[in-house]
Structures are given as structure tokens and as C-alpha cells.
Figure 1: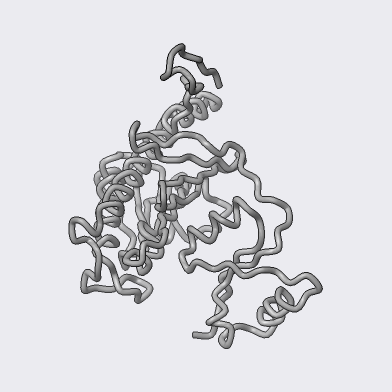
Figure 2 (figure 1 turned 120 degrees about the vertical axis):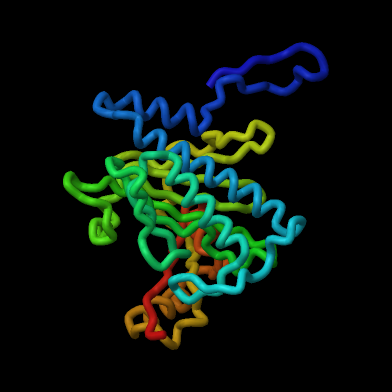
Length: 277
């Protein structure tokens, strides 16, 4: 990155003039692949708009009466917040209008959403528009979780076409909405990169290139309130975290994206074990 030093009082700060925005980064990544058609890049631009829009509404939720329940529940039985509904609507609109998505699967909707307007589109998007929304009223960080699949040749975009292992995703990531919006994204075979939303510019800026989790850090993060419903091996693992010669410290926010982001930055273990409930 290049910078310039300006004279005078305003020139005491070194100003970076070679900022890598998410838009620029996606374009440069596309140029690395001669076979690229640009469809994936356009899809990511639509995702970027969704993240910016959701971040805006979350910042203003208390001011424009978007806190509280919407009076419905989602596919997992969770009570929907007003922002859950808005976040889902934003995703549906953005994916549909991108013209590059054939099917969208959202935690907020029972069935897969097939975009018949885009019959030749080859991508499918899975998402939880606002994960951890029950924490919103307390000001706790929440986030968007997303994954992108490329449909096989001949696939018609039905939900059966999406019953694929996570390793088949061509891209995945999350956006955390906290003190700032933090986007973490990876593409298949590539590195993990983090972007921070600059509200003044209205752009996601590359701030954490090639993110790698520290190999070891004595922190574990899991909801021990569910431990009575865990299998015995999981209980033994958790007990070992606390009874080792150098016990691990517990850090649990209760918002998956926030816990995962902290673990990615600082290291440790994040676990969400299956239970008998």
C-alpha cells in the first residue's frame, strides 16, 4: 500500500491512498481466473449491499422502532424479531435482483425460495440473515451467516440440489454487526480475509488479509447450560477444559458470529455440541 505525507497541521497523519475495498478485491480476484464470467462477482456485490443495508437498520433499530418481536417464529422455532423479517426481505430482494441466484435458502423461511425469473442462474445461496437477534435489545453483536454453492450442470434449482456437504461451497463467511461491521469471507481454495465497514466511505475495507487463527490459546467457548443434554464424550471434553493442569478460560457471548470471530482472531475452541433437547 502507498501513502502520502502532506505538509501543515493536517499533514501530520500519514494518509493511505491505496485502499483495497471489497469491490476492488473481488475484481482483482476475478482477474486471476481466466474462465470467470463475472457472475460470481456480481453475486458478491449483491451480498455486499445486503450486509450494508442490515448494518444500517441495526444501528438505527432503537430509533425507528425495529426492536422487539414480529409476532411470528422461524423454521427452527425461534421467535422472530422485526429485524429478522427485514433482514430476510433484504436478502430475498438482493439475491433476486442480482440475476445470478437460482435458489435462496434462509433460516427465516420454511421452504427454499426458487427464483423462476433467473432460470439459467447457476448459484444457490444459504443464509441466516441475522443470527443471534435475541441479543439485539441488549446491544450484543449479532451477525449474518452465508454460504454459496454452484449448482451442478442440469440442476433445476430445487431444494434437493442443495443437499450437499459444506465442502462443496464455493464461498462462505459471516458479517458481524458490532462497534463496526466486520465481514469475514473465504473462497474455495483461497485464504480467509477480513473487511471492516468504513461508514464515511460506505465501503468495506480490507483490514485483515490472510487471516489465520493462532495455533493455541487457552480459551473455550460453549453454552454449558446445555451440558445435561450432551453426550458423555462431550461432557468429558468440557470437564477436561476446566480440570487440566492449566485450565482453559471460558468466554461465551451467546451470539455465534461474535464468539466465532473472537476465536478466529485470538485462538481457542468454539463448540456448539449436539444435544438431546
